[in-house]
Structures are given as C-alpha cells and as structure tokens.
Image 1 (cartoon, one colour):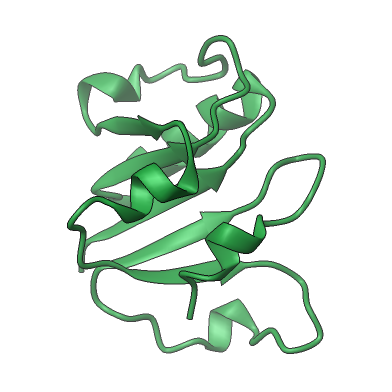
Image 2 (image 1 turned 60 degrees about the vertical axis):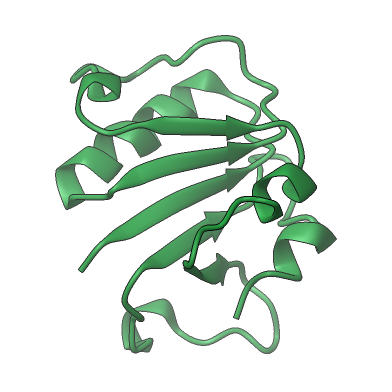
Length: 113
C-alpha cells in the first residue's frame, strides 16, 4: 500500500533526516515538505534521497495545485482525533505532521480527513 509523509513547515534538519530514514525503512513512496525552514538534511545516515524523493513546496497552496490523488491524514493531538493505531489506513495515504514548534497549519488541516 503506497503512502507518503508530509511535513508542514519543518524547522530542524535533524528531524527531517530522521523522518527520511524512517520513511525509507517503512517503505514510503516519498516525503513532501511545505514551507521549508531548515538549511540541510541531517541525521539521514542512509542517504535516503537516493532511494525515495523529497519534494519541497513553498506553500500549502502550491502543494494543493498538484494533481495528487492522496488521502491526507493529519497527525495531531486534538479533542476530535482518532487513535492512529486504531485507524483504518486508506490506500495512498499522506500522513501530515506539523512543525516541531507548532501544529498543522489551517491550510494543511483543511486538506486532511
């Protein structure tokens, strides 16, 4: 089952590197970033960029203008949130994570199920 990871305004390169390594290990199709704030990818000891693409978009609007047919799952702790391990995971899911110093943007939340 293909899936991807979206990072909304990631701040620290070491966290991006960890996500890239995990994405590769779990078989993600790609990693998207919105509003890049980091300078370089650190902690990516497996050089995953050679194995899975990382696609950067300046804004959520730029991302929404692509023709991707993914189902977006916002990963947040909110009163109406479902327990992620109990979720029936859709085909072609994109798991969306907010920045280290905040939560998912309103624009990103608007595309999440």
